[in-house]
Length: 411
Image (tube, rainbow, N blue to C red; front, top):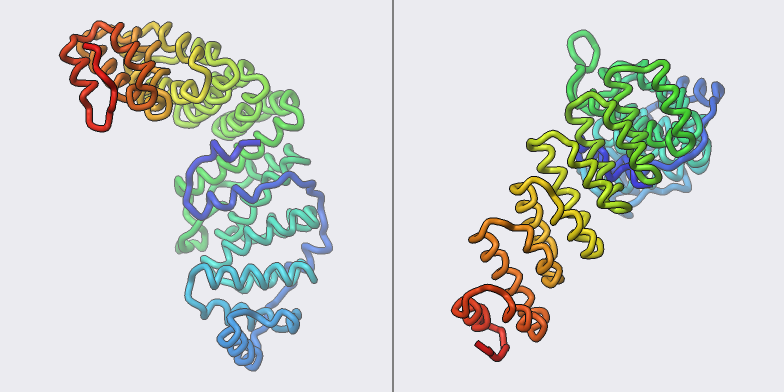
């Protein structure tokens, strides 16, 4: 599944979390939840001193002596290290070792850390725990108090959750306001995290992931559920996710879904996702759908996206789509973009689409550009073609006299 190829860019740290998503079952475990909630880390000064010496001298932690009584001391020591890869790697190493022995003790470590380390480790623990015991991982994450660490953990788990229980995963997110998914920042005077655009995007992204996983299992069931009980922006986010998956097997159905999304950024992003997939399997059908888009900045962007896909396919696909494009200015722009994408690797591909440029001076300019590249790549074939063009002999001579080009001139 290529879901995260179409994810919303939030922050660099959040994007790294999406790569950890894997489809695993999630159930419920009250016993583990109770154990985690009762954890009260204790700080032992003598252990900090001995642990500091271990890290300073050896550059790593003595995992053989780890137990539940010294986690707070270890976490305090780790946070004394300079922020960076070394600190993060040592903490992840300790977290993994703790998790192998006793997952709740790993949760205790995450609870003892501070930002930004606790956010990184919350996501890491959610990934580790979801593989081994998804029911406990889900209950741990959903019962954490709203905080950036909880947000990162849930982002790491929501795909796994949705893979086996999409309805409840969707309900959990939809019943949680955006303010409960902060990425960072401080509490307000009322003790709550502010509800901002970033938190709204995080919530929307979770629903997108859930929708995409839901469609893998049963797209019909997902669509039916949406039509019965969900509307507004939540529905749009879920539909966008469903469409991103459905586009791989049935792009025409995905296109119908996209049309039902509220006009705006989310619909545009979903349309580009469907167009990308459709263009790979049936570029002419994708082009016909694209012709229905209203003119403007987004349509121009979509045409460029489809053209980039055409540049990766057989030349015949580009010829049939680009030469048949009905709007002159759009066709010219698409052809020039296509040339930009292909000239450096195979200039011969540009020959057949030049006919779509109706502006005389521009046609000559692009013909010369194709000739310049093709003569460097396949001199003898390009020379024969150049002789058949309507370019003036002086122009042909100039092209053949380019530095580094050893082609005898017949003109």
